[in-house]
Amino acid sequence: MRTDAAGLARPRVTDRSSIRPGNLGLVLRLLRDGGPRSRTALAEDTGLPKATISTLVNELSDLGLVREGDLVRGEGVIGRPRLAVELDGRGVCGIGLEINCDYVATIVVDLRGRTVFERRAAADVPLLGPGGTLDITAGLLESAIAHTRAGGITPVGITVAAPGGADPATGTITTSVNLDWHDVAVGGPLKERLAGTVLPPVSVRNDAHLGTVAEYLAVAGDGVQDLVYVTGEVGVGGGVYNAGRFYHGAHDRACEFGHMPVNPEPVPCVCGRLGCWETMVGLGAFLKKAADPTDTVRNTMTDREQRLAELHRRAGAGDERVLGALRDLAAGLGRGLSLIVDAFDPRLVVVGGYFHQFADYLLEPVQRILDERTLAPAVTTCQVRPSTYMYTSALRGAAQYALESIYQDPAGTMNRSPALT
Ligand SMILES: [Zn+2]
Image (tube, rainbow, N blue to C red; front, side):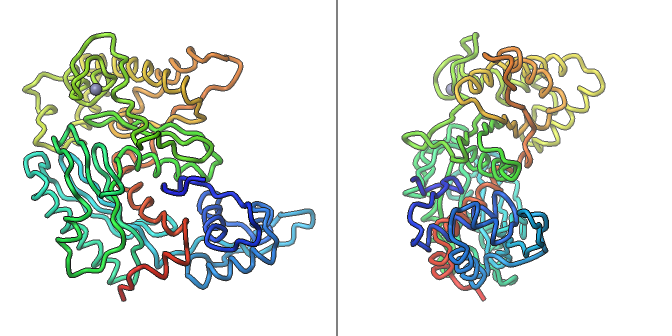
């Protein structure tokens, strides 16, 4: 069983006498993904004896991670109401940080997924370079830590969402084409900048992978186990969940969707190759088609979301150039997603980033392309949906990933975490 990734592994009960830490985590995971349920239901869902479940729930309750809340009715033949066990974890949080091309951000999320702190700073990251960017990032982290300390909340992990490849073992951004960063250490320098503060472990991960974590957790409660997430930014990335597990690939570099060679035109890509999907559906390609170089919507010094909102407004007003660019974008998205859907057979395709911002122009034609291309028309195809968090998926996923150690080893993590009060 893989146990290294963000909610991403599902422990199986193989040894009923093994109470911890796997079974404590198993109970927590069930409550996170499927919602509150009674002790009886937990016993049925885990296959563990009721007495074991009681021990586990009591221990998790003592750790402040679960509580018994409202009554649930209708379980079993008699339907006797029972107390529901639910995630508590108000005193536990994960801290997410995101370094992007034009901003740095932080979010603090508690075990129930509630945002308890959020802050964002505009920053020209390629211009600032690693040193200046990490100064700002450390400042945001300091604010987040101060907030958790004031609220008596214990952070159990910090995860940095990197716009490119990341080496979690060394806390390094290995390659970011968009930032022109190569082998930039992040974890160590952040700790150095906050030398007087006791920090939980810091990890660095690819932003699109972390976005996939957030989008998966948003729909896991609906029983979705197989999902593809594709996000449109300057680059195009994403991730895959298969049977409730994140798909890493051999080198943790899976799902570099943006560099699939699907553009029939040999347009040069930032990666050095020709005809990558990104050259069809990346933000740069879309903006080029939608507006002249001197148009304000192409001024990268101004807020990207607002520039795209202006293009969305123009589309609504019938601007033929923008509408044409959106038609091309939908066709390009449909082409690439067809390959991905054929490869992974997901139940759901979630589109995020700027694809989400233009969802009202993209989803219908893209769904039509996928429906037309399905290999078995009688079988229901996968559904295309806008993301839950649009531009904040990666940041939110980072905070949720930072909580992962709680699911791996609830008691050990709580005991190791720095007391802040
Ligand atoms: Zn490429």
